[in-house]
Structure formats: structure tokens, C-alpha cells
Image (cartoon, rainbow, N blue to C red):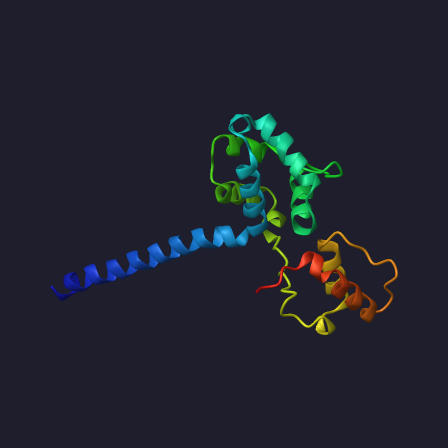
Length: 178
């Protein structure tokens, strides 16, 4: 008799654990494939109504968008075949589901099954130039700042040269808060 009273409590606890497990897995799908989801969401939002229903037009737009990418998104484009130098191509696995209005997180989950590297990509942390002390950054980070700005410093040989150059360009690229 007592076992039957405890059974509903145990089954509710198990049910609660299952709900938590499944709800947390949907959150991690977007975080796990952040570059994929971010890039495909941006692609989807840039498509016109005419393009959204045609896989061939989606692939054309995807290749155009891939030409303008940098860093992690460029690597993503390489993996899916959106760049001319890509070794493989799985654009159809993106364009068809997008034409069906499948959520980008679901498309990325399917791509992960084909190539796990796609979901291993992470966006780089953005440096807040209003708060950071440039002297404490590595030269690699200073070069990345310039690269993000599409600037190159031909005369920079030392860290102090990069810092001076960034400080000179800062008003052009960094919006200061009032």
C-alpha cells in the first residue's frame, strides 16, 4: 500500500528530470553551433521573399555572403563549400531546408551530424576599446583589432608602434559614450 503512494512522487521526479534534460538540450544547440546559427540567421534575414523559396537562389546568396566573411564565419563557409577554394560542398543541405523555412538551429544540428567541425567554431570575444588597456594586450590581439578595421600597419615593428597606430585610428572606428 505504501509503495503505491510513493510511486507517483517518483514518477513525477523522473518526469521533471526528463523535462529539464530536453529543455536544456535545445538551449545548448544554439550555443553549441553559435557561428553556424549566427551566419545562417543573418543569411535567412537577408533573403528577399522571392529568394526564400528557391534553393538555387539561396545558394547564390550564400556564396555572395561568404565572399565578405572573415575569421570564424570564413572558416564556416570553407567547411560548407561556400568558398571557391572549399574542398567539399554541402550547400544543398542548407539551401533546401532554408527554402522550407526550417529553423537555423535545426539546420545546424543536421550539419553537425555530417561534419562536427561546423559546430566547434566559436566567435572571438570582442575587445571593448573604451575600457581595455592596449598595453596589456598581446601583439596578436592588436593585429586582430587592425584586421577587424581592415587596416594594416606597414611601419609597425614593435608593440608600441601598434598601440600608437590604434590610438591614432581609434576616433575613426570607436564610438565613445557621452
